[in-house]
Amino acid sequence: MEPYKLFDAEYKFACLIWDHEPINSTELVKLSLSELGWKKSTTYTVLRKLCERGILRNEGAMVTAIIPKSEAQRHESQTVVDKAFGGSLPQFLTAFLGDKKLSAKEAAELKRIIEEASR
Image (cartoon, rainbow, N blue to C red; front, top):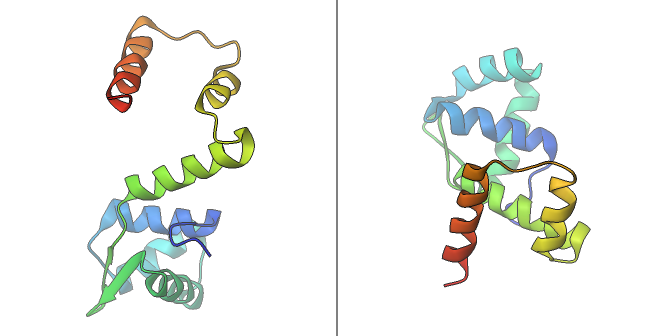
């Protein structure tokens, strides 16, 4: 399995940690119950699996992320572009935008990002 590939439920769980880290594992169990409807055993099973894969860390009952959210998002985004659009960012943007019109501010920001990436 790819190291940063997160299934939907794993991503939601990791988001709880990214949003609240460092978080005590007891508090994480409570948060998982209220936000995800998970029992304690489910929370600890997913936590253990993500720790084994090097995405999270649980030391002294304190849970933190090893992989930043931005890195996981980058991996997921690249996977979508590769899988659905053959790695073509222009094809992805065309499909993503559809008939949507960009504001001048959005267009300027995208232009800046593209120019920085092409250097």
